[in-house]
Image (cartoon, rainbow, N blue to C red; front, top):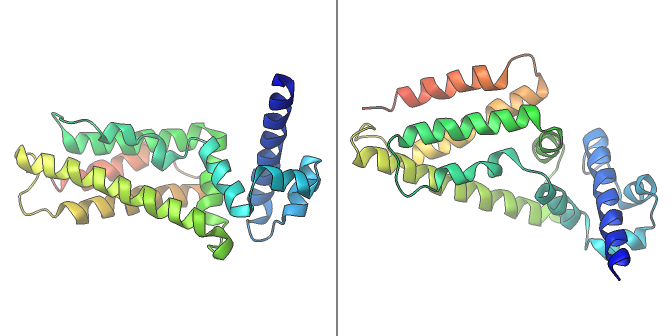
Length: 202
């Protein structure tokens, strides 16, 4: 029984590995389940045994990797902080570092942002993205509100605008680096984030 379970997990991993490689090369829409089955050396039936459809497979691929924008969220969950804006900066730096150093996370993020069309089949993926974005913005707003309460952030700053702007800034920097990795994402990205946050400090 244990061997059977191990074999099933190994098959599942090989399917996800094949899917990730093909998605990165041909895009999600350009990759069929038959392409994945052939690359993984399994039947389409084996794929359907593990995954309901391509969207479920894609979500499983994202859950298996440490997605950069999701992995560092714990930094924004502290109930108190001596430097709430510093928490946002540290979050961004952790995300940039993970993107540069973790190949699996980088490839998965690249597929999820640059090589996917959000068709009906990808509804679950779009919902996951929307949920994670909303969760991140909620956490970031809390950091900004805390900064205002502590007198560290300008009182006229709108937390929602800051949080959404930070999401766009971090994701945009990663996208640009993935498309043309001709700059140090941690160094330059950190400088850009720090410049942005400095304009918010009281």
